[in-house]
Length: 275
Image 1 (cartoon, rainbow, N blue to C red):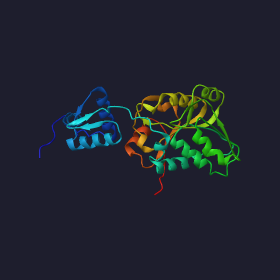
Image 2: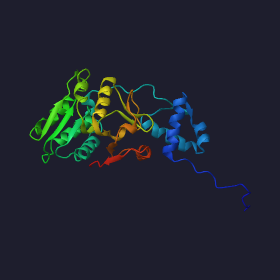
Image 3: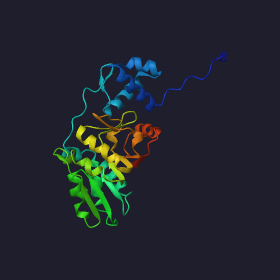
């Protein structure tokens, strides 16, 4: 066996999968098509590894696989009615809700944003008979109704505004008048996407404006999103990850995405899913 020549060193190690996939996504943003063979050469990995990376990104909805490579997603997902979204990842949403509701103490002032996950938080709060003097502000009719059985220990304030029947939510005008006049302790905010680069995003514009007002009205801002929303980017930008204090997601979330989000400095809590 020959000795290594002067200047020879150890072979470079391949990038971690999450870093490699993030860079593949960046390349796809710059181009209309990425080829498996080109990616394999660029990242010095096998074509089998590249195909696995692209398949993983497709499962997260971040690209579309085609013969020989991948292309960007053709369109943003349409907004689903509340009742349809409520049954998706229901077990994971209940796990997130239990963890979030467990952080609430007597005397707290909360804001619960519109959404199926935040509605699950309201349902979990309604079972917390140990609580006293908790005030909840919300722009969601479903959340207000979910909290109604707990009226003896919870005060519910509805922001008012224009009704969006699809989500049973209230938006501007008027919602901002209430939110601009309060200083709540904690806001639990829902969304359609949490991405390491693009931040927190939402599928519709009217509710996005209210989400920004909610963030401005709270001292502590927690995004609540099940694992299917990590790495997703929706139509409307809500805020950067620097604008929130933490994320509660479920323990079934992609570990590579969770690690990437944590590397940004975001505190990520994982809720254990029963069953």
